[in-house]
Length: 103
Image (cartoon, rainbow, N blue to C red; front, top):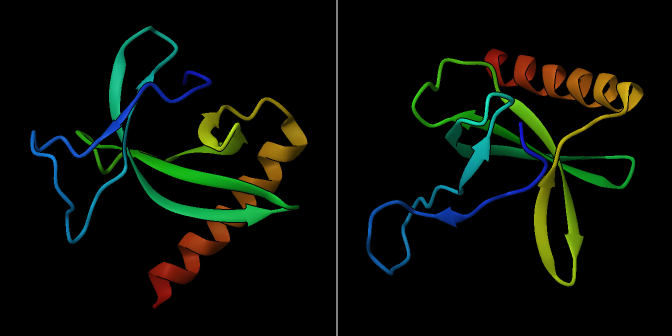
């Protein structure tokens, strides 16, 4: 996945608020193909924020986790390169997903 967000829009073509607004990001994968990803969940670990995104056109596919970083009051998504950080956040997300499935 790319290391930054390319854009965000509702995809409806209108400039208005939605009751249940999706946060859609264009993410470039390893093969250079752009995919529409929807932010479905956010969580924090060790004072860092993370976002879980699902492919808008393939919601059954596994989610992708990005770290949310802020710079000059703008938030952007960053790929997680550190193995220890990746292990930690995937473990947290799996616990969250398991508890959601049990509810």
